[in-house]
Structure formats: structure tokens, C-alpha cells
Image (cartoon, rainbow, N blue to C red; front, side):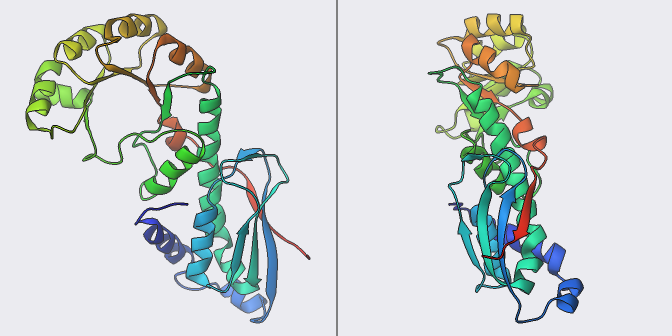
Length: 280
């Protein structure tokens, strides 16, 4: 279940974009009393995500349309699997078809790539796979939900959620040490201080300034091993930058506590899901 106050706003914006001036094709071709029985069907292997959003799409168009998920979200399904039944006014079903599919194709893609990365962790690993703020504008709540469905975790929700000092903060502040000292002086006592570093020298400075979390960004395997050795027991170790599923196991075994992957959302694309008319 997606419990987020912006869900209806997201759905309404998408419906307004597609249906704001009506649907002249459906209204011209389909009788007002026609009834549709349809199924959403996976056209490829994927991790299913987005049933709640489909239900909200049709609730906003026509509350009499019935939506029934046919399996749990987070399940990996094969091509040809029926994911959800949608029954009701044919006009209403057709009017919501593209918006509903756009949502589940995107959300299922995010869940699928997340599951691939989570499955790449070695057995018994304590490492967390997390997303980043590199989300589609306006769709962050849905994409972050899809990451959780895929078995991943969420990074900070927004800029007010946590202190995360990045390269441009360091450039503006003048040094790693000064940025961390200023953050500690001004941030709430409940906030951890994370500092992104891209060299071993910056890492030494961040550890000396007592950063709670060090983010090793775009480190080579050799530098990463040295960085983990230096930070072990002194700070939580996060690894980021150019992460692929092939590197996940190696990074976890090297000692990463967190692997943050922007590609979970910014490069997920869409999977292929269709809406098929049925006779039963």
C-alpha cells in the first residue's frame, strides 16, 4: 500500500495531462453502455509494482470500475503473467488505460532493476542498496515506493531530511573540514552528517572532522579497499558513483554498509506491460 499524501496529486496531474479535454476516440467509437473485462499482462520478465496506483487512476475516472490484483507486489513474474483484472465501463477503462500503464511500466521497471541489485549481494550481507534523489520530477514518491518493493531502501526524502555534504558544498565552504564543522554547528542534534569524498585525502579530512557517514564516490577498487580500511569503525561507509549490478557483490564484500545507486530511478526506463481484452 502506498501511503503518501501526494499520490492523488500525482494521479490527478497525469489524468489532466491525458484526459483534460476528453477522449474523442472513445466517446465516438464505444457505446456508453459497453462493458469491458480486461487484464494487465506482463510482456517480459519483471518485478510487479503499482497496483495501488492503477486502483487510484480508475477511482478518479469512474469509481464503479473494479480493479483486482492477481498477485502480490514485489513478485518476479514471467512474460505472459496476468497481473491485474480491470472490469467496468468500457469507456472508463479505455480512458484510463495509458495513464495506468505508464505508471506501472515505470514503477515495475524501478522495482525490477532494484531487485537485480539486491539479488547481487552476497548471502548474509549487511549492505543496504539505496536509491538517490535522481528521480523523475513529480514522481519521487512512486519511484521510491518501487525501490522498496524491489527490496531496496530509500536515501533521504528531500533536502531537509539529512545533512549530505557533496563536492559543490565543499567547494563553496572552502574545505571538507570547514563544511563539516559548519554543518555540525547548525544542524539539529538528531541529524547525522554525511560527507561525500572523492579522494583518500578528503576521506582523511572527513574522518578527522568526525563525519558520521563517509560517501566514497567513484573510487577505484584499489582506492576503495584503502578507504574502507581507513574508515572502518570510525564512520558508516557508503559507496556511490557508477554502480552496476556486476560491482555490487564486490563492493559489499569490500565492506560497504550502503551502496547508493542513482540508476535505480534515473536509468530504469519502462518494462513492457499491456492491457488485454478478455471474454471471461
